[in-house]
Image (cartoon, rainbow, N blue to C red; front, side, top):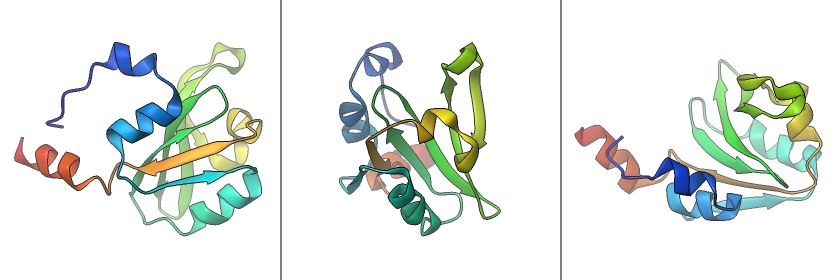
Length: 115
């Protein structure tokens, strides 16, 4: 995508640091799943977000009016998967959420389109 990220070092960081590094400056914080869901209903189609949970990080995106959570599912060691937000045990079990838009990071998108 035209940006240099060391995925090994990035994976060792806290979710807030990952979001600061790859997202636009506008982030949102939620302390319950229902408020997060209300916010997610307003996101644009195909917009990509990084979301940090209590102890986990993944991606959120909307496609055909369905909202998905893509992550490496640690529950029962299922591995990388996408699941509907409403069906994600990992997402629902978090007590805090920090979300930032990758799509609105203009520098990242500009560099990506150059390549």
